[in-house]
Image 1: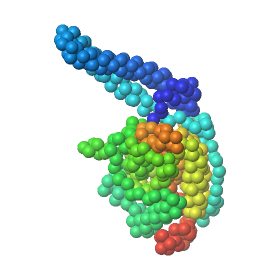
Image 2: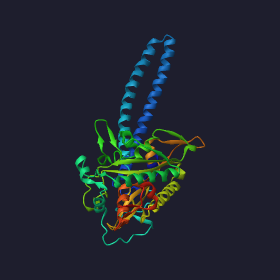
Image 3: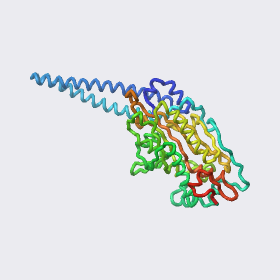
Image 4: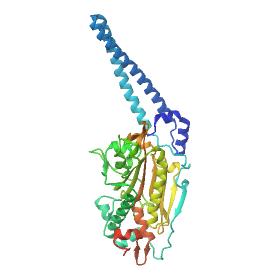
Length: 423
């Protein structure tokens, strides 16, 4: 959530940055400032009236002590009038503050200066590329055919038991999935991230704190009776560990990693681009997250990008890193880098990770702060990234490493999988 003082002090700049994100309601900024003016006016009136009540109450005590009961009664009547007024002011303030809050959460995070203008993924900037796109043998097929050939994933039974997009991994498919999860977690913890197993459901306050609500309400699975939401990523429970916490400057940075299933409705996702493992309603992911000093968050972002880049390199996959344009960025992000790996059998790039700096957008909602060396209270910055999302990595490993004799796995997975090849 943006801070009102930023909207007030840098109004034109805020509108310009919102334009980079293709936000269509810049007038909302003016509406928020006007509501804040109204709130301040009501607050001043409230404080003045409360001061009069306090002064009159003291005067009543003096008058009663002096035996001036009639004058004291007159003061009491004034106090009664003041209390009626203050009750009305309090009600008005509550209404204005709610309207102010409801409008404020409609504003997305402001894009950083590095964010390129643009509206679609075609406008994203390629930062760098790595790896070698393999030349597949003549009998190469997409991963959904390899899955059938080697009996790795059961889509039909998943559809029967739950619905489309909820597959069963089985046999060597389940083993490969588990091997990747363990490797990713070991890689992250070796880099200083503390491992968590988080809850897979969160309450409304947690979903609000990281910006899933109200922006992505329709994309989340909602357990209506209990008011819980199935998590779309472990970013949500991990970040909320520090909701309404005041940290010490020496606590920063806080580095966390977690494996979790992720649940996304992905309404309207159909067609060849979502075939097989390309897009699921339940998928597994390992996440990395940092809560940092605001002066260091962009250095941390670069560090996290390099961390994930090395992980993709270790999997021996061809990849590219994109800096997302304003129109392709998430609601809460100030700057996002996407990782894509090349699927040789599908002959297209598949997104496998997003690494984002949220700056103080989430932590302002969460009220996650720290005291600096001078005792001043500041908001922390939050960052997160996929390290990695498994379905498309699974698909790319199958497709890019297929041979006539089986699927050769990258060396880093051999000890986790217990074999060098799937056959």
